[in-house]
Image: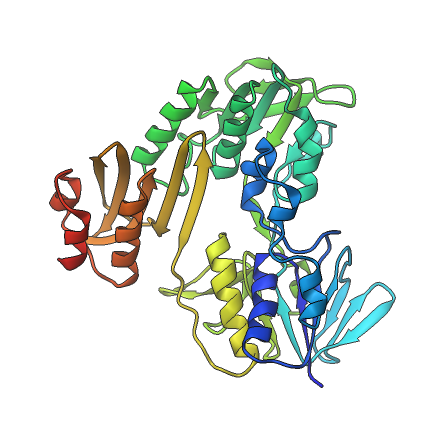
Length: 401
């Protein structure tokens, strides 16, 4: 009986094993995760879960009973220490498992502050795992002072939760503006105004010099010359792909674990999917950090583990919840040369163009605009910028046009 092993029990790993069974694979499946819980959703951790609006059971992607019922061996709280591609084995401490096909869905890890500038002090947190969210939740006390380092989506979502809970929030972003790496100036302007309206002290072009305290952080020195008294700190300065196992096994790395369009790594019997994996796209190895990519790429990898020879075509989509605003993103805005703002019926959206072609949208409380733009982008169509900007334009007409 064939044995397929999946290392990494996140969204991509879950997608792989459920697709394998859904495609009729009747061999042995082992799903290995280093956390003590079954696969769960990460996005709500910094949103609804931290706010207390989502119970733990609702985080899980499937009930724990599902795995045994579907013949999937789920190994939680288990660290894989080595992969031997020649012997086709996976080592778990003193235990060795043999595989026929192996998939790496090892995700990513948050970047940490160096210990030399206070990163090892108590009260300094990252927001990536369920354990992170559970550890940080008691700090969210009304009136407490929090410093958030990093103005990406994780930092902004944490700032929104903290502000809603009545904390004193300072957010610093070393770049010239928040969301600089992922969004237009127009979108940065929108969310800057939103956070300031909720009392967040948002400082752009400002970095951290160091955190201070005896054992627990008590203050932060910033590059603008100020010193803040803080009760705790949240660090949101990006992630790094989980490539250590792949590198030790001799697999090729390029912007993550390098794969071809079907998810093969440099070893024909080892695949990769999710945050850890890069795939060929428009002449480069692209890596997408999103739930949608993890699900879709995981499903393609599962089909190719079964010999179906399916290429992965990304259809990027993302979302973020901040206060009463739901941001929905479709496409990739990289390289855009025009941003069209649409305001209609109390909604707002930013439509990104490159050489006259619609390539992405940021939709704020505008689900209809998001869905229309997403369909246009995925079908390779575009929309007249003048029509998009006109609030009188029927969005359905854009689909017809």
